[in-house]
Image (cartoon, rainbow, N blue to C red; front, side, top):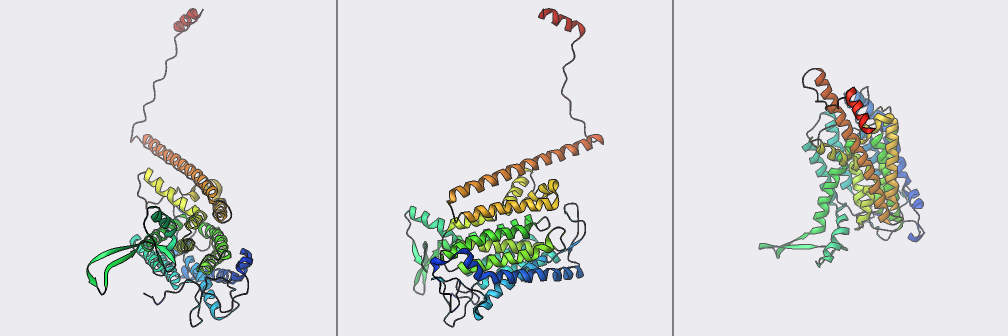
Length: 469
Protein backbone atom coordinates (compact mmCIF):
# COMPACT_ATOMS: atom_id res chain seq x y z
CA UNK A 1 0.00 0.00 0.00
CA UNK A 2 1.31 3.47 -0.90
CA UNK A 3 0.12 6.48 1.09
CA UNK A 4 -0.16 9.90 -0.46
CA UNK A 5 2.31 11.39 1.97
CA UNK A 6 4.57 8.36 2.28
CA UNK A 7 7.91 8.94 0.58
CA UNK A 8 11.05 6.97 -0.14
CA UNK A 9 13.61 7.22 2.64
CA UNK A 10 15.89 9.84 1.10
CA UNK A 11 17.07 11.17 -2.21
CA UNK A 12 20.05 12.87 -3.73
CA UNK A 13 20.33 15.76 -6.18
CA UNK A 14 20.59 14.85 -9.85
CA UNK A 15 24.26 15.90 -9.93
CA UNK A 16 26.02 14.83 -6.69
CA UNK A 17 29.57 15.89 -6.07
CA UNK A 18 32.10 13.55 -7.58
CA UNK A 19 33.68 12.52 -4.30
CA UNK A 20 34.48 8.96 -3.27
CA UNK A 21 32.73 7.98 -0.01
CA UNK A 22 36.06 6.79 1.40
CA UNK A 23 37.41 10.36 1.09
CA UNK A 24 34.56 11.89 3.10
CA UNK A 25 34.96 13.34 6.58
CA UNK A 26 32.44 14.41 9.20
CA UNK A 27 33.39 18.06 8.74
CA UNK A 28 33.12 17.82 4.95
CA UNK A 29 29.63 16.32 5.14
CA UNK A 30 28.56 18.88 7.75
CA UNK A 31 29.60 21.80 5.56
CA UNK A 32 27.36 20.58 2.77
CA UNK A 33 24.24 20.69 4.98
CA UNK A 34 25.04 23.81 7.05
CA UNK A 35 22.38 25.87 5.28
CA UNK A 36 19.69 23.95 7.17
CA UNK A 37 21.26 25.04 10.46
CA UNK A 38 21.42 28.71 9.42
CA UNK A 39 17.82 28.84 8.21
CA UNK A 40 16.40 27.12 11.31
CA UNK A 41 18.40 29.41 13.60
CA UNK A 42 17.33 32.63 11.89
CA UNK A 43 13.64 31.73 11.69
CA UNK A 44 13.41 30.61 15.33
CA UNK A 45 15.31 33.67 16.54
CA UNK A 46 13.04 36.06 14.62
CA UNK A 47 9.81 34.18 15.38
CA UNK A 48 10.29 34.14 19.17
CA UNK A 49 9.58 37.88 19.81
CA UNK A 50 6.64 37.75 17.40
CA UNK A 51 5.11 34.82 19.26
CA UNK A 52 5.80 36.61 22.56
CA UNK A 53 3.77 39.64 21.48
CA UNK A 54 1.01 37.39 20.18
CA UNK A 55 0.89 35.44 23.45
CA UNK A 56 0.75 38.59 25.59
CA UNK A 57 -1.97 40.18 23.46
CA UNK A 58 -4.15 37.06 23.86
CA UNK A 59 -3.34 36.41 27.52
CA UNK A 60 -1.40 33.17 26.90
CA UNK A 61 1.01 33.64 29.78
CA UNK A 62 2.47 31.57 32.59
CA UNK A 63 1.63 33.13 35.95
CA UNK A 64 3.98 32.54 38.89
CA UNK A 65 3.09 30.37 41.87
CA UNK A 66 4.86 28.74 44.80
CA UNK A 67 6.45 26.03 42.58
CA UNK A 68 7.71 28.28 39.78
CA UNK A 69 10.94 30.22 39.63
CA UNK A 70 9.80 33.35 37.82
CA UNK A 71 8.12 36.16 39.76
CA UNK A 72 6.54 37.94 36.78
CA UNK A 73 4.12 36.52 34.17
CA UNK A 74 5.98 35.14 31.15
CA UNK A 75 4.56 34.52 27.69
CA UNK A 76 3.98 31.03 26.34
CA UNK A 77 3.93 29.94 22.66
CA UNK A 78 7.70 29.67 22.42
CA UNK A 79 7.13 26.17 21.12
CA UNK A 80 5.52 27.64 18.02
CA UNK A 81 8.69 29.63 17.32
CA UNK A 82 10.74 26.44 17.65
CA UNK A 83 8.28 24.64 15.37
CA UNK A 84 8.61 27.36 12.72
CA UNK A 85 12.40 27.05 12.91
CA UNK A 86 12.20 23.28 12.48
CA UNK A 87 9.73 23.59 9.63
CA UNK A 88 11.89 26.19 7.88
CA UNK A 89 14.93 23.90 8.03
CA UNK A 90 13.00 20.96 6.60
CA UNK A 91 11.38 23.14 3.92
CA UNK A 92 14.84 24.46 2.99
CA UNK A 93 15.92 20.87 2.35
CA UNK A 94 12.86 20.47 0.11
CA UNK A 95 13.84 23.57 -1.86
CA UNK A 96 17.31 22.14 -2.34
CA UNK A 97 15.71 19.46 -4.50
CA UNK A 98 14.64 22.04 -7.09
CA UNK A 99 17.41 24.58 -6.61
CA UNK A 100 20.85 23.02 -6.68
CA UNK A 101 23.50 24.48 -4.39
CA UNK A 102 21.34 25.00 -1.32
CA UNK A 103 22.41 21.65 0.09
CA UNK A 104 25.40 19.62 -1.07
CA UNK A 105 24.28 16.06 -0.47
CA UNK A 106 27.05 13.61 0.30
CA UNK A 107 27.56 10.89 -2.32
CA UNK A 108 26.07 7.53 -1.41
CA UNK A 109 25.14 4.32 -3.15
CA UNK A 110 21.94 4.21 -1.07
CA UNK A 111 20.46 7.49 -2.26
CA UNK A 112 17.95 7.36 -5.12
CA UNK A 113 15.49 9.66 -6.85
CA UNK A 114 12.01 9.46 -8.28
CA UNK A 115 11.49 8.72 -11.96
CA UNK A 116 10.42 12.32 -12.58
CA UNK A 117 13.54 13.65 -10.86
CA UNK A 118 11.78 15.04 -7.79
CA UNK A 119 13.41 14.32 -4.43
CA UNK A 120 12.24 14.49 -0.82
CA UNK A 121 14.92 14.04 1.86
CA UNK A 122 12.65 14.08 4.96
CA UNK A 123 9.40 12.04 4.95
CA UNK A 124 6.24 14.09 5.27
CA UNK A 125 5.20 11.72 8.08
CA UNK A 126 7.78 13.43 10.30
CA UNK A 127 6.36 16.85 9.40
CA UNK A 128 2.85 15.59 10.08
CA UNK A 129 3.89 14.15 13.43
CA UNK A 130 5.63 17.28 14.66
CA UNK A 131 2.69 19.41 13.51
CA UNK A 132 0.21 17.29 15.48
CA UNK A 133 2.44 17.36 18.57
CA UNK A 134 2.81 21.14 18.36
CA UNK A 135 -0.93 21.73 17.91
CA UNK A 136 -1.82 19.48 20.86
CA UNK A 137 0.69 21.39 22.99
CA UNK A 138 -0.63 24.79 21.89
CA UNK A 139 -4.20 23.81 22.74
CA UNK A 140 -3.03 22.67 26.16
CA UNK A 141 -1.13 25.93 26.70
CA UNK A 142 -4.09 28.08 25.66
CA UNK A 143 -7.15 26.28 27.01
CA UNK A 144 -5.90 23.14 28.75
CA UNK A 145 -6.78 19.58 27.72
CA UNK A 146 -6.97 16.24 29.47
CA UNK A 147 -3.89 13.98 29.63
CA UNK A 148 -5.74 11.39 27.54
CA UNK A 149 -6.07 13.80 24.63
CA UNK A 150 -2.37 14.67 24.86
CA UNK A 151 -1.43 10.99 24.84
CA UNK A 152 -3.79 10.45 21.89
CA UNK A 153 -1.99 13.14 19.90
CA UNK A 154 1.38 11.59 20.68
CA UNK A 155 0.17 8.14 19.61
CA UNK A 156 -1.18 9.60 16.37
CA UNK A 157 2.25 11.09 15.66
CA UNK A 158 3.85 7.72 16.43
CA UNK A 159 1.43 5.97 14.06
CA UNK A 160 2.38 8.38 11.29
CA UNK A 161 6.03 7.42 11.75
CA UNK A 162 5.20 3.71 11.69
CA UNK A 163 3.26 4.01 8.43
CA UNK A 164 6.33 5.38 6.65
CA UNK A 165 8.72 2.92 8.38
CA UNK A 166 10.50 5.62 10.40
CA UNK A 167 12.13 3.70 13.24
CA UNK A 168 10.34 0.36 12.84
CA UNK A 169 13.56 -1.49 11.95
CA UNK A 170 15.36 -0.62 15.17
CA UNK A 171 14.07 -3.83 16.79
CA UNK A 172 15.84 -5.96 14.17
CA UNK A 173 19.23 -5.64 15.86
CA UNK A 174 17.93 -7.48 18.92
CA UNK A 175 15.18 -9.72 17.61
CA UNK A 176 16.85 -11.16 14.49
CA UNK A 177 19.89 -12.59 16.38
CA UNK A 178 17.54 -13.87 19.09
CA UNK A 179 15.31 -15.67 16.60
CA UNK A 180 18.34 -17.18 14.87
CA UNK A 181 19.72 -18.41 18.19
CA UNK A 182 16.38 -20.09 18.86
CA UNK A 183 16.45 -21.74 15.44
CA UNK A 184 13.60 -19.68 13.99
CA UNK A 185 13.97 -19.03 10.28
CA UNK A 186 14.12 -15.44 9.03
CA UNK A 187 12.83 -14.01 5.76
CA UNK A 188 14.19 -11.22 3.56
CA UNK A 189 11.65 -8.46 2.95
CA UNK A 190 12.85 -5.50 0.87
CA UNK A 191 16.44 -6.43 1.66
CA UNK A 192 15.93 -6.67 5.47
CA UNK A 193 15.72 -9.79 7.59
CA UNK A 194 12.52 -10.32 9.52
CA UNK A 195 10.33 -13.09 10.89
CA UNK A 196 6.95 -13.76 9.32
CA UNK A 197 4.30 -15.62 11.31
CA UNK A 198 1.54 -17.07 9.15
CA UNK A 199 -1.85 -17.21 10.87
CA UNK A 200 -4.25 -19.60 9.06
CA UNK A 201 -7.66 -18.26 8.07
CA UNK A 202 -10.87 -20.23 8.64
CA UNK A 203 -11.68 -19.67 4.97
CA UNK A 204 -9.78 -18.43 1.95
CA UNK A 205 -9.85 -14.77 1.01
CA UNK A 206 -9.06 -14.64 -2.66
CA UNK A 207 -6.16 -17.07 -3.01
CA UNK A 208 -4.84 -16.48 0.50
CA UNK A 209 -5.36 -19.10 3.18
CA UNK A 210 -3.32 -17.32 5.88
CA UNK A 211 -2.25 -13.86 7.02
CA UNK A 212 1.46 -13.07 7.35
CA UNK A 213 2.45 -11.02 10.40
CA UNK A 214 5.80 -9.20 10.21
CA UNK A 215 7.09 -9.57 13.78
CA UNK A 216 9.91 -7.02 13.42
CA UNK A 217 7.56 -4.39 12.01
CA UNK A 218 4.94 -4.69 14.73
CA UNK A 219 7.44 -4.89 17.57
CA UNK A 220 9.18 -1.85 16.10
CA UNK A 221 5.83 -0.06 15.92
CA UNK A 222 5.23 -0.73 19.61
CA UNK A 223 8.71 0.55 20.41
CA UNK A 224 7.98 3.73 18.44
CA UNK A 225 4.82 4.35 20.49
CA UNK A 226 6.65 3.80 23.79
CA UNK A 227 9.58 5.94 22.65
CA UNK A 228 7.40 8.87 21.59
CA UNK A 229 5.38 8.77 24.82
CA UNK A 230 8.48 8.39 26.98
CA UNK A 231 10.69 11.07 25.46
CA UNK A 232 7.89 13.60 24.93
CA UNK A 233 6.94 13.46 28.59
CA UNK A 234 10.55 13.27 29.78
CA UNK A 235 11.25 16.52 27.95
CA UNK A 236 8.11 18.04 29.42
CA UNK A 237 9.15 17.16 32.98
CA UNK A 238 12.64 18.63 32.75
CA UNK A 239 11.40 21.93 31.34
CA UNK A 240 11.41 23.65 34.71
CA UNK A 241 14.07 26.40 34.50
CA UNK A 242 14.78 29.18 32.04
CA UNK A 243 16.67 27.81 29.05
CA UNK A 244 17.10 24.33 30.51
CA UNK A 245 15.29 22.20 27.93
CA UNK A 246 16.22 24.26 24.88
CA UNK A 247 19.88 24.26 25.92
CA UNK A 248 20.14 20.59 26.84
CA UNK A 249 18.32 19.59 23.65
CA UNK A 250 20.80 21.66 21.62
CA UNK A 251 23.67 19.87 23.35
CA UNK A 252 22.05 16.50 22.68
CA UNK A 253 21.47 17.47 19.04
CA UNK A 254 25.21 18.08 18.69
CA UNK A 255 25.95 14.59 20.02
CA UNK A 256 23.35 13.03 17.73
CA UNK A 257 24.76 15.02 14.80
CA UNK A 258 28.23 13.57 15.41
CA UNK A 259 26.77 10.06 15.25
CA UNK A 260 24.70 10.90 12.14
CA UNK A 261 27.72 12.35 10.36
CA UNK A 262 29.73 9.24 11.17
CA UNK A 263 27.02 7.07 9.66
CA UNK A 264 26.96 9.26 6.53
CA UNK A 265 30.73 8.91 6.14
CA UNK A 266 30.35 5.12 6.44
CA UNK A 267 27.43 5.22 3.95
CA UNK A 268 25.20 3.41 6.42
CA UNK A 269 21.84 3.53 4.68
CA UNK A 270 19.08 5.52 3.00
CA UNK A 271 18.31 7.71 6.01
CA UNK A 272 21.76 9.28 6.36
CA UNK A 273 20.72 12.64 4.87
CA UNK A 274 17.47 12.70 6.83
CA UNK A 275 19.26 12.29 10.15
CA UNK A 276 21.68 15.11 9.41
CA UNK A 277 18.92 17.48 8.25
CA UNK A 278 16.80 16.81 11.34
CA UNK A 279 19.76 17.17 13.73
CA UNK A 280 20.71 20.51 12.19
CA UNK A 281 17.09 21.72 12.19
CA UNK A 282 16.69 20.88 15.89
CA UNK A 283 20.06 22.42 16.75
CA UNK A 284 19.35 25.62 14.83
CA UNK A 285 15.84 26.04 16.25
CA UNK A 286 17.07 25.54 19.83
CA UNK A 287 20.00 27.91 19.44
CA UNK A 288 17.77 30.55 17.85
CA UNK A 289 15.23 30.31 20.64
CA UNK A 290 17.71 30.06 23.54
CA UNK A 291 18.63 33.78 23.78
CA UNK A 292 14.96 34.59 24.43
CA UNK A 293 14.52 31.66 26.81
CA UNK A 294 17.69 31.90 28.93
CA UNK A 295 17.38 33.47 32.38
CA UNK A 296 15.71 35.91 32.67
CA UNK A 297 13.37 34.39 30.10
CA UNK A 298 10.97 36.55 28.08
CA UNK A 299 9.13 33.57 26.60
CA UNK A 300 8.65 29.93 27.56
CA UNK A 301 8.48 26.81 25.41
CA UNK A 302 5.22 25.65 26.97
CA UNK A 303 3.91 22.16 26.32
CA UNK A 304 3.98 22.90 22.59
CA UNK A 305 7.76 23.25 22.70
CA UNK A 306 8.67 20.66 25.31
CA UNK A 307 6.62 17.90 23.68
CA UNK A 308 7.87 18.91 20.23
CA UNK A 309 11.56 18.76 21.20
CA UNK A 310 11.03 15.37 22.84
CA UNK A 311 9.30 14.08 19.72
CA UNK A 312 12.00 15.31 17.34
CA UNK A 313 14.77 13.86 19.50
CA UNK A 314 12.91 10.54 19.58
CA UNK A 315 12.61 10.53 15.77
CA UNK A 316 16.35 11.06 15.33
CA UNK A 317 17.27 8.40 17.90
CA UNK A 318 14.98 5.85 16.27
CA UNK A 319 16.41 6.65 12.85
CA UNK A 320 19.86 5.65 14.14
CA UNK A 321 18.65 2.05 14.21
CA UNK A 322 17.15 2.06 10.72
CA UNK A 323 19.66 -0.52 9.46
CA UNK A 324 19.40 -2.69 12.56
CA UNK A 325 22.24 -1.07 14.53
CA UNK A 326 20.46 -1.15 17.87
CA UNK A 327 23.63 -0.17 19.75
CA UNK A 328 23.41 3.24 18.06
CA UNK A 329 19.91 3.64 19.46
CA UNK A 330 21.45 2.97 22.88
CA UNK A 331 24.04 5.66 22.05
CA UNK A 332 21.21 8.09 21.28
CA UNK A 333 19.52 7.31 24.58
CA UNK A 334 22.79 7.95 26.41
CA UNK A 335 23.12 11.29 24.60
CA UNK A 336 19.63 12.26 25.79
CA UNK A 337 20.07 10.62 29.20
CA UNK A 338 19.47 13.69 31.38
CA UNK A 339 15.69 13.96 30.81
CA UNK A 340 15.40 10.16 30.98
CA UNK A 341 17.21 10.01 34.33
CA UNK A 342 15.13 12.84 35.76
CA UNK A 343 11.87 11.17 34.71
CA UNK A 344 12.96 7.80 36.12
CA UNK A 345 13.88 9.42 39.42
CA UNK A 346 10.52 11.18 39.56
CA UNK A 347 8.69 7.87 39.13
CA UNK A 348 10.82 6.12 41.79
CA UNK A 349 10.55 9.03 44.20
CA UNK A 350 6.77 9.26 43.98
CA UNK A 351 6.41 5.52 44.39
CA UNK A 352 8.56 5.60 47.55
CA UNK A 353 6.43 8.43 48.92
CA UNK A 354 3.17 6.69 48.01
CA UNK A 355 2.12 9.45 45.61
CA UNK A 356 0.62 9.10 42.11
CA UNK A 357 3.16 9.15 39.29
CA UNK A 358 1.44 12.21 37.82
CA UNK A 359 1.70 14.17 41.09
CA UNK A 360 3.74 17.37 40.83
CA UNK A 361 6.61 18.10 43.22
CA UNK A 362 9.73 20.25 43.53
CA UNK A 363 12.26 17.44 43.83
CA UNK A 364 13.48 17.26 40.23
CA UNK A 365 17.19 17.55 39.57
CA UNK A 366 16.87 21.18 38.49
CA UNK A 367 14.95 22.03 41.68
CA UNK A 368 17.66 20.52 43.89
CA UNK A 369 20.46 22.31 42.06
CA UNK A 370 18.52 25.60 42.03
CA UNK A 371 18.31 25.60 45.83
CA UNK A 372 22.11 25.43 46.02
CA UNK A 373 23.33 27.21 42.88
CA UNK A 374 20.50 29.50 41.84
CA UNK A 375 18.73 29.40 38.49
CA UNK A 376 21.67 30.18 36.20
CA UNK A 377 24.06 28.01 38.19
CA UNK A 378 21.68 25.07 38.11
CA UNK A 379 21.10 25.42 34.37
CA UNK A 380 24.82 25.63 33.62
CA UNK A 381 25.52 22.62 35.84
CA UNK A 382 22.89 20.60 34.00
CA UNK A 383 24.36 21.78 30.68
CA UNK A 384 27.64 20.25 31.86
CA UNK A 385 25.93 16.94 32.74
CA UNK A 386 24.12 16.90 29.38
CA UNK A 387 27.42 17.57 27.57
CA UNK A 388 29.05 14.70 29.45
CA UNK A 389 26.37 12.27 28.32
CA UNK A 390 26.51 13.66 24.77
CA UNK A 391 30.26 13.03 24.61
CA UNK A 392 29.83 9.52 26.00
CA UNK A 393 27.08 8.63 23.54
CA UNK A 394 28.92 10.03 20.54
CA UNK A 395 32.07 8.16 21.58
CA UNK A 396 30.35 4.83 20.92
CA UNK A 397 31.04 5.42 17.21
CA UNK A 398 34.75 5.88 17.95
CA UNK A 399 35.73 3.39 20.68
CA UNK A 400 34.50 0.16 22.28
CA UNK A 401 30.92 0.49 23.44
CA UNK A 402 31.23 -1.62 26.61
CA UNK A 403 33.39 0.94 28.40
CA UNK A 404 30.98 3.72 27.42
CA UNK A 405 28.01 1.77 28.76
CA UNK A 406 29.79 1.30 32.09
CA UNK A 407 30.73 4.96 32.41
CA UNK A 408 27.20 6.07 31.55
CA UNK A 409 25.75 3.62 34.08
CA UNK A 410 28.23 4.79 36.72
CA UNK A 411 27.41 8.47 36.27
CA UNK A 412 23.66 7.83 36.10
CA UNK A 413 23.81 5.71 39.27
CA UNK A 414 25.67 8.37 41.24
CA UNK A 415 23.21 11.03 40.09
CA UNK A 416 20.25 8.80 40.95
CA UNK A 417 21.44 7.73 44.40
CA UNK A 418 22.42 11.28 45.37
CA UNK A 419 19.08 12.67 44.17
CA UNK A 420 17.07 10.03 46.05
CA UNK A 421 19.07 10.66 49.26
CA UNK A 422 18.51 14.41 49.07
CA UNK A 423 14.84 13.94 48.29
CA UNK A 424 14.30 11.54 51.20
CA UNK A 425 16.19 13.84 53.56
CA UNK A 426 14.06 16.81 52.55
CA UNK A 427 10.88 14.76 52.93
CA UNK A 428 11.86 13.65 56.46
CA UNK A 429 12.76 17.22 57.43
CA UNK A 430 9.38 18.40 56.18
CA UNK A 431 7.61 15.68 58.20
CA UNK A 432 9.51 16.61 61.38
CA UNK A 433 8.81 20.31 60.87
CA UNK A 434 5.11 19.59 60.40
CA UNK A 435 5.03 17.49 63.58
CA UNK A 436 6.82 20.15 65.59
CA UNK A 437 4.25 22.70 64.42
CA UNK A 438 1.43 20.40 65.56
CA UNK A 439 3.14 19.85 68.92
CA UNK A 440 3.52 23.61 69.39
CA UNK A 441 -0.17 24.02 68.61
CA UNK A 442 -1.09 21.30 71.10
CA UNK A 443 -2.62 19.06 68.42
CA UNK A 444 -0.38 16.08 69.17
CA UNK A 445 1.67 14.95 72.13
CA UNK A 446 5.45 15.30 71.97
CA UNK A 447 7.54 12.22 71.43
CA UNK A 448 8.45 10.43 74.68
CA UNK A 449 12.03 11.15 75.64
CA UNK A 450 14.33 8.27 76.43
CA UNK A 451 14.94 7.78 80.22
CA UNK A 452 18.19 9.31 81.27
CA UNK A 453 20.66 7.55 83.62
CA UNK A 454 20.44 9.17 87.12
CA UNK A 455 23.58 10.78 88.51
CA UNK A 456 25.28 8.75 91.31
CA UNK A 457 24.87 9.96 94.89
CA UNK A 458 27.95 11.04 96.90
CA UNK A 459 27.77 7.81 98.91
CA UNK A 460 27.66 5.69 95.73
CA UNK A 461 30.57 7.64 94.36
CA UNK A 462 32.60 7.10 97.54
CA UNK A 463 31.74 3.38 97.58
CA UNK A 464 32.81 3.04 94.00
CA UNK A 465 36.12 4.76 94.73
CA UNK A 466 36.74 2.50 97.78
CA UNK A 467 36.04 -0.68 95.72
CA UNK A 468 38.51 0.43 93.04
CA UNK A 469 41.12 1.06 95.77
